[in-house]
Image (cartoon, rainbow, N blue to C red; front, side):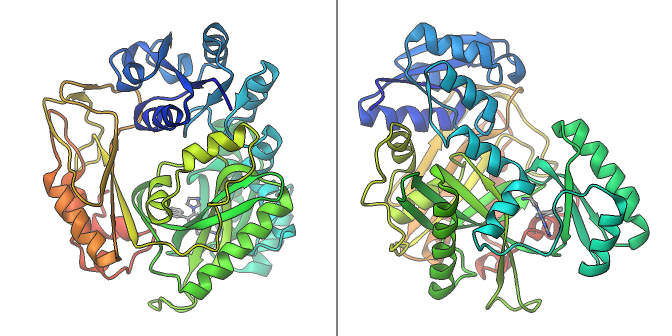
Length: 454
Ligand code: MV4
């Protein structure tokens, strides 16, 4: 097992990783920018190294500083968390070249699944359904021919894009070529590659994703799905496990399919397969179809809801796997989710305009009690810096069924007090009380319908 892990991240996920290391008996090194000198991850870690000024490109994204920090502290592994360098294969390569274990999949798998065009191809070969669409679009004629075959609307996506960036919906044939040109230009400017493809556009799908854990030697577990449809501008707000959209039979099929696919590509470490779920008929919830969208080759923000319904520690397993241990026998998909878990992402932002709201937290009460988990790095007196994402806390509840989990979330949201910065807590209270949410009738456009200004 590793002796010392450097955590190349900040905020709640840095704490989550430090806690897992503690329980494994592994020493920890925090890195931080000058904006995070008083951050809890710095206080919790055994050692810390300041790696630069507040802007992320000069600190949390600055590879030479992070590698140097690992070398001077004698760390033998690096955990990238989520965001920042977590899906950067060059960083993973650099770690390996500097004899540091990267806690994530091997760089070649990050490369394969990080590109949406190669990932789509790999998943088709593994028997996973995808939407009708193209590979790399090289000519205008290929795009025209594809639309002839698929019909409209279609969506043009950047192969290097992700999380909803670099997409163009095309509803009229006349706009196809101009959209294609714009998509290429934006992809090149935003991601350094003009590679784009297109596929049939689904109007209001659910976003359902599957948690993967694998050891690269045939040990693979698909640990159930998460329902992530409640999102605003591609930022998830509420996630739950399991999804109300799936029968036990559909779930079993989906998980078996995911396991076969992950064995096919020899996946290793944790990851998430994202699916778009389309109802058979508008308004009907039964018998939808799944289409593979993209894969995330990192631990995700919402891994917690899977942990609550499986009782398994995903970060601990991730570290064990990176150290070359085989998948634990407790990680098996012949596993029924136990009860229901819901996560609310509490952000420092205006609940109406969604504008970020950095500043000092002058008063704080965190919820607690039976079935309540709060993953957070904030404390009374903490100053939320303006330089990073606005996530303050993840409030997670677990209960025997969805109805009880919703009631528990309402209770926990009422206990949650943050003063000094604006938060989206009022927005969460409104969401959790919404009859359509309570009925489970949700899709990716739910928030846009609820507050069109958002
Ligand atoms: C789609 C789609 C509909 N049809 N692909 C959003 C995040 C990224 N993972 C892919 N996304 C989508 N892909 C097809 N073929 C709908 C979304 C989508 C979306 C697209 C445009 C504007 C807002 C959206 C919100 C949620 C999902």
